Image: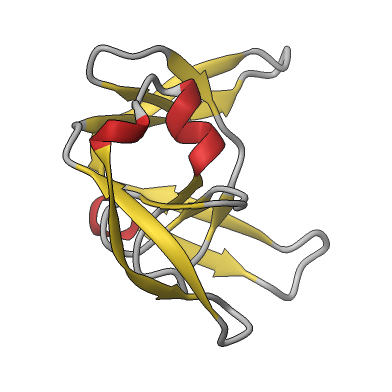
Length: 124
């Protein structure tokens, strides 16, 4: 995904399309890379992660947009599909997760688990 906060830099992030994530998850390091200042982050209620433990999390009111990047046959990444508004939860240490509240609200997602390697397809 190519991600940009209003007024900030564009960054490219690889992440997991996660049907179990209620929202998109990014790390505080990603917030910094996007140009979101600590003062623009506010503490939110604790997030429950996959192992059932609770962790501190933050949100921002700064608008953030993202777009899928699709590799061409030569391996170059090109924008694909609609630009979507994301409202991520920021955790201290996290790999990007594209979750239900924004990613799954825009894309139809089909998972194929019984193929090697497991894969998914997107439609909009």
